[in-house]
Length: 112
Length: 115
Image (cartoon, rainbow over all chains, first blue to last red; front, side):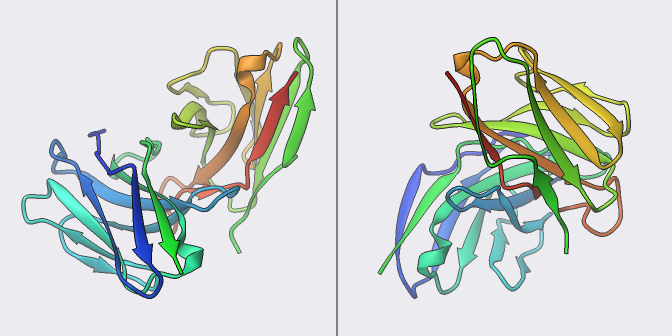
């Protein structure tokens, strides 16, 4: 799987949008971009994934650049409960059992 | 609701003991995984299994073995625990295909301390 690069930490004011960047310049055509987050003392939790189109669900939006070399996860109105480590992962989806490979992620601190 | 459970949240063992960490999922998933998580190192894959009695080494299998006798249960075994195996252990699962394929479900984790 391609490697990803994320900033180690970010701060965001409560109620503001949190924009978390991820670089994946060596991504292949059959690799999707996934985002997970891990709140302290819990297992990681799936947020969203995409291939090349922007995606939105009840948790977040995912913006993928046209060349697919980078993406941004957007939490539109961050709350204190969004404080967590956020992982950006690229993964081939057309194989039935490819495990996720986690990097070190970005530690997001939402500040009141 | 989807569920992955792990046998203990906290465990304390002594050096040299044999340790079993159990993971059970109720979603009929084919794929199951064991990770360990350490400060500054992130999550690292130890072993995974894509079917009953099948297993594959991950990135750091040394000092560990696994057992998958039933589809719902994936056990991680430390044959002779050592202090450098003190860590948070996380189990996860997802299906081969269909709904949920894109989402890997994690258990709450077991924090193991080896003295």
